[in-house]
Image 1 (cartoon, rainbow, N blue to C red):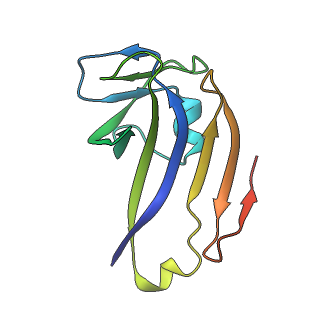
Image 2: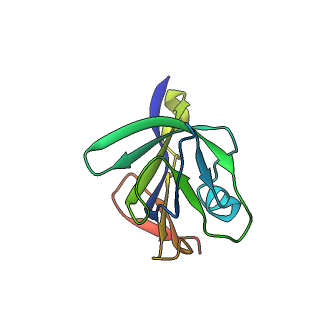
Image 3: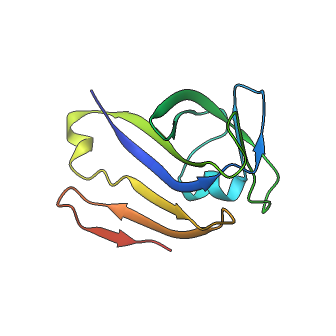
Amino acid sequence: MRTVLQAVIENARVTNPTESLALRLDPYIVRAGDLQPYERVEVINGRERYSTWIEPGVEGSGEVHFNARIGDVIAIVAYTDLHEGQTIAHQPKIVTLDAKNRVTSVILSRQDGEGSRST
């Protein structure tokens, strides 16, 4: 088994600071990254990394609730375990958000470094 990147959501802006241990996300963002509620993710805020899980927020709200300052730009990273043969065709998703946390692109990353847009 190998642990590989499943998805990364880039440029997510924190809309509400929270004391919760979880990351609350708009379900549109969750689906764009092919993630699941309560899935374990890593949040990167500057040079700090946090391990947490996703809780579904309000659909279409663009909400990103996390224990950070409003406006902080974070990356959300998910990994998956694959058998050796599965890694050959694996294409992680690179999801980019705009300043209002709307999905602007989803790219399927290939092993040759190229990517293909899926939205």
